[in-house]
Image 1 (cartoon, rainbow, N blue to C red):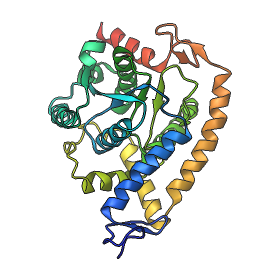
Image 2: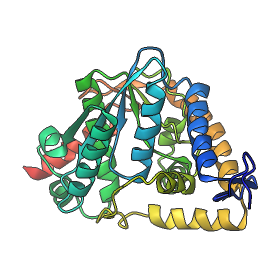
Image 3: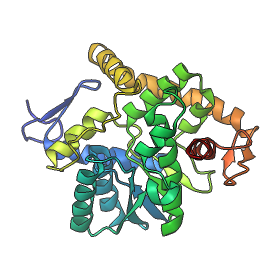
Length: 304
């Protein structure tokens, strides 16, 4: 097969569009698509400092590489932040990879740990949870959000950029629907321009499989050790289900994503009428206390 954009040998076929691309044209298309998403939702503005959350996985490292290239030709700066949950035998590999890549790219990098911020590692927090109703991913995700907010403020960042891709968005939507947590659907709108500290997802319109191929074709090292808690929730099952649908019906993920955007707008507008300030941290929420503070307080109560 020949690349549709040049005369080189094609290495990747986008089944939902039928487009055949060589490695170089494919990589350029990912960079272009990322830039288009950033521009469409006004994710990064003039002279801003972007905190790129880098975990050591394929998505965040690919984002770091791409957004670093953009920063060299646009009027914004970046710094990398990594959140250390304190998971033995898991986070160490990632920290080494991130540190190595940041040195190669000449990007300033800082690590923030759950232990320093919450006086608890993730494993210690899991021991304090009440029963098994609250999954490890739920607790970890809640603590990570607060840790990233702290990290961004600490380095003086205006924006937090994460490597969440289109598949992540679809999975999160289904999880929120199945759990009945419909308020969170309003947070899924990629336009966060009205927030004081914006959280952006430049890969939100790109398939996970394309990020995987981008990392592969650019010889990017990324963490191979899976999180020991990854199968506790239902995200893996939902990922497999959606991948099966995409295999049989190419483009169905794109269709679902467009539907999520419409639903998210409706919920977001509804939530905006009920916004309050958290009594503990002062951040916006839809009740008297935000999910992060609520989680931390419960863990502290159990600890005592």
